[in-house]
Length: 407
Image 1 (cartoon, rainbow, N blue to C red):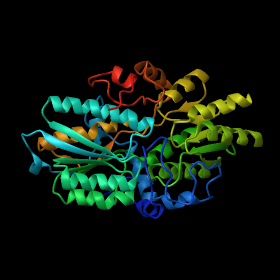
Image 2 (cartoon, rainbow, N blue to C red):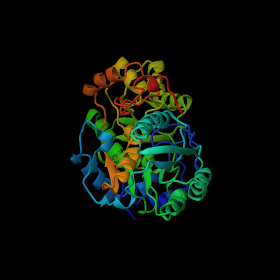
Image 3 (tube, one colour):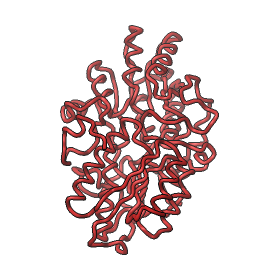
Image 4 (cartoon, rainbow, N blue to C red):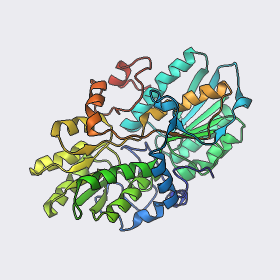
């Protein structure tokens, strides 16, 4: 199995029959488990243990300080030095048909990336690299995405496959069938249980998110302080590893952290925070995704209490509320600009260039010192936009993203 941020948690993913939407946001179907993602009940104590793999945690901690190859002005093309895949067998002078099996565009993170991807596609069509990209959207359903991939294999006349898996274990056989065609297979965002793809593209991962956010809270809180952790849903690997890392750090530093699944429902988030405030002071809020962060902040305002130390995400709604309130905050990212990288990988494959076998992209949080610059750079963007979308040099900027022109 390829060495990846998701190795070691895949057995757990298989048992849970994981569903996915984006790696960071809302509007996802319930996983096929006994848990209700909209439940406000606390998760079982120690339940993150099955997701915690020390070797992966250590690896991602090291990668957070790694030197990335490539131009920092183009982070969507940067990567951590490692094994490379020879693509010379697919070098071609012909424009390629790309077949994209997408998990969904059911939430703002995926919608932002989908817009960026299509603007990158326009560039590569104009340059003659790609003839067309036929896309099938699975609507957050494993069976639909499996059928989509099989359709592409049997009838799509595809030159290249791009797959953003809906879930890890369930999609593995379909990805392997795509690999068996002998054509390039590019997997991005979430992993699968096979090393057959030509490249696997992703930011550093969930442990890195958990490490950055938990350490930020620890640095700004006191031992014994109480933190409410707001989690979207159980069973998604990059979300589970975010919490597994954060929980470990909170325990080691004497922070009293209680986690709740919210289903990314603003009303549930407000209820959780309000109920917690009735029980006593809440010094910090930790989130495994930023959508709903505004609702959490508003719950403190409704109760007339001091703002917490808080981590959200690089969604514009959180960045704006963070600036408005002046709270102590951090905006972790799961780099949305990764949606450009699969198509740029196609360009390299067509040229016969080597590409990273595991293409690990930068994943750097937005700090308070950087917030103003990102707010200015994204002025006029809607609240559901993500600050590190990486499309400023693409055609249609900024109007296509401002108007949410979703193909």
